Length: 168
Length: 299
Ligand code: SF4
Ligand code: SF4
Image 1 (tube, helix red, strand yellow):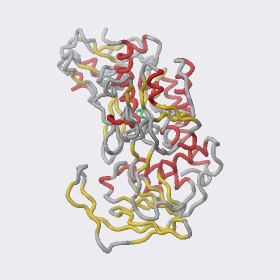
Image 2 (spheres, chains in turn green, yellow):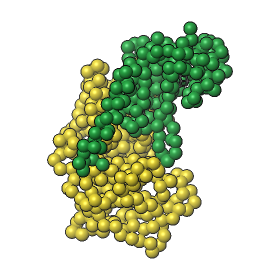
Image 3 (spheres, chains in turn red, green):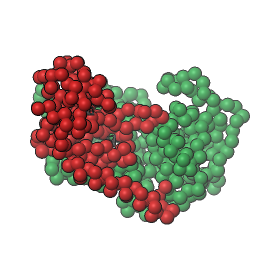
Image 4 (tube, helix red, strand yellow):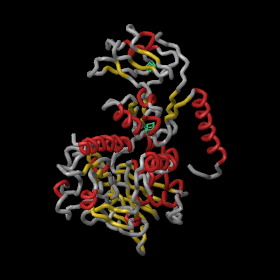
């Protein structure tokens, strides 16, 4: 079963309002994946720098198109590459709306974020989630993430509405 | 206080203090890390920003003898000077000190960080400059000027953040560099600037600012914040005979890897690379720790 459509138990969301583009997420990802970060920052112009990583789509096109069923979804909902099956054709990259999968020159397979499968196995959070100094990366059960997103938005609105000559 | 620039200089609206404290508590409680606070490690003499908190100085050479390995991550706690007359007047301050005192006030460690000011000039366009300018606005200054010798396009902080500040009410002046600070009774009163034009690329690859003679103009200010860069502050100076081999003529560390020669000392973060963003310093720190761990295992 390839589980192209899944019910994610875990959802990761990057709160771009909080993110300051410091690159800590990418640094710790790089370190935990032997020098290859799966969350990367780009300057989209004028010095606005933000990270992007796999969205672990609920209806993942990368899983749908994979001819060898190497692109899989684990029980938590994380989409990952089974390297033993992957032939490095990068059909996943063509299918991904966000250009996420990359080709590893070492394993000759597609590689991408697996939400730190190993760390999660040890009961830990993915490195980026654990280390972001602004708590911009939120991960949890979907409803928990949705609620947190709305609470943060509400906080921003209230700060703007209720501050009388307060902070800029 | 633990946490470096993330706690002591970067404004709390960017990185909330509690987030760093959580990390520090994790280190001390879950990993048994022991902290020695108010302690400056040094071989040789040098004044750095934040020295007012030092209660004891220990010699780096003693520490290196006492411990199996040492990782040096002392950062960039010195500010570049503007290099103009009047710089020592009251009301002239470097961005690091300006931000640092604001944070101390937030933590209740100093009473009044800065007296109320109406007009502020920030010189520079890096991350410290934009943080200082925004904090000056938040302090209630009526006019905050951000003055840079090149244009928005070359600003190290990036056009986006400059535009953001302009939208918040900062007055942006590009292609101008300070020539002197006008001082009255020991206090800064104004800054004289000279207009610049962009010439061919300099060493840094960016167009060199070239002064336009006779183009001087003056802006009044009660507070002048110089934000023209920070430099690394290694825990040893040229006076330290044993370690001076690891310094260049400017006093910066030269090292091929994270390990200092064949010593049991490693170095990481901004003290090694010069000012970077947190992520780069963090990546460095992780790999240096990995090298130190290998060294301790003897492989
Ligand atoms: S660590 Fe957090 S704040 Fe820094 S770039 Fe990543 S998401 Fe943004
Ligand atoms: S690789 Fe692309 S398509 Fe696949 S789950 Fe991630 S974001 Fe979605």
